[in-house]
Length: 394
Image (cartoon, rainbow, N blue to C red; front, side, top):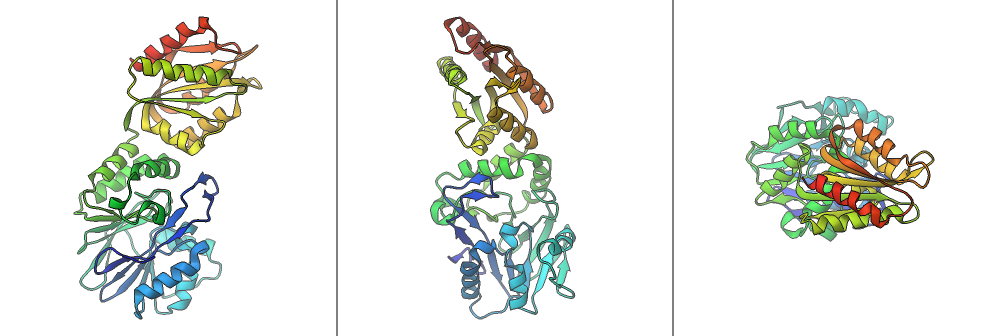
């Protein structure tokens, strides 16, 4: 569907309502949007394409939005296939069109499009370069590792629009959540899950990008996923600043458990009750065996404190907790206070393994006492749970 952003800029992206797993790992129950834009001035610029899964819908949107005009440029902000599936088609369809991208992106193009020849048809842009479209110009800023090394963002001066690549993106089809931020009732929820699972490892790089683009006068942010952000942008930019600094967004405790036969689950749920009774402002709970691991990663970053409860397994830790901690390490989880509950029927080992894994992460404060259960929680274990709750809340 085509949506006018202003008289010169149109949204020509597509929704993918059939996709079950984004990047073959993240649940997208509301589908996924692949965003693309068209700028029409004296020159015409296509801003990225979409995933090949949605080729026909995008071609129709492009032709309709062009209204008979011929595009002069295809700007490639990010080379990931969900944004570049139609590059080869565009270059065949419009033989005079130039591809505008970073040197790294042009270098990598051949990895995705064997035999694509852009000799005399490409333009390398680097930090601070501009591309005149007539009364409007695009200025380019490097955004390496947000979240690939070739990424650029661009700023349309006359319209005060930032084309932000994957930054400020979110999960969900726009026909479900709204094409513009004022239509989206809960942008932060799926934007947070998207950020920490896609870009979370690269907080330093996101901070570097924010320092470049936030001083610019901004009326809108056009990401490659999610709605166009308009109006007061500070709620969105403020969250991105907090997230990329690994700051605490919400005061509270995240309780995540991995339980085999229900004993560890009972202790974790009891801990959640104890925390609430002690006045903890927010307690979030995740069953790592059944709940979406990406949402658990999101909550681990959202809150400043966590209690991890796990059963022992094969002289180690139950695999759902092992996988979760692996995700946290890979996404650079840091600056958090963590309490541990382990369970073991004859040789508890979960606590030792969790400690080892957490010790490899940056600025993780382990809170004592660690609670050790034997098979089932008993009345005699309640004092230790209370003590851990007091310590984590202190």
